Picture 1 (spheres, rainbow, N blue to C red):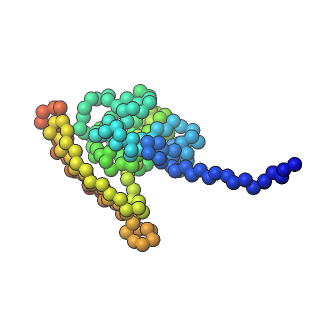
Picture 2: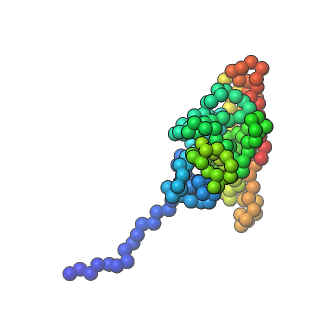
Picture 3: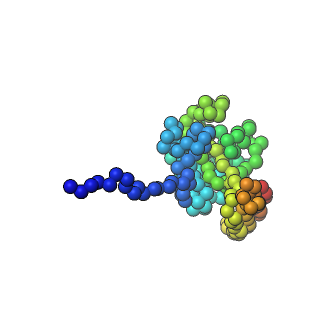
Amino acid sequence: MSEVKKDQDLEVITIKSQRGLISYMSASGAKSDVPIIETPLSVSVLTQERIEDLGALTVQDAIGYVSGLYNGPYGVDTRGDWSVIRGVSPVQYLDGLKSLYGSYNNVRTNPYGLSQIEILKGPSSVLYGQGSIGGIVNLVSKKPEAETSGQLWGQVGNYSRKQVAGDITGALNDDASLQGRVIGLWRDSDTQTDYVPDNSIVFS
């Protein structure tokens, strides 16, 4: 009889929280780094790569392919990003904090400054207090990273659209305990409606 080796070499598989178009983690469902599969709520996550692949010009454009969500209740509107989740208007959050109060007294978030968009469907008052029974849309800002990287791009399009943007991040000291990131965007654009511009300046 041959002796069976007890200690067998096991293959170690490392799973990152975000990989390309797929994210396995969402802070919206539990306000912590709990895997989506273990979250007792329906959560959809759009990563930065997914937003870019969609060619989304606004947050409203980006969330158009999420199941159970309708992203065009009022048509084209440069004042905000509107949607309906399960028949009810959701509450919009930025990094876990409520960002929309009332109808129009808000700043429209540009998707270029986001690392991902999280859509939580259904009531969530246990986590977020009084809100919408339809769900929430949580916008997650880009955070500084230790590895130095950057990008600069320009864009032209319909309605005399011209846009330039830049993003650079990296460590500010040797042990990467201090990190920074600068994001900037400038846009000059008209819309399908005469005398209604869609201009924007972003700096963070």
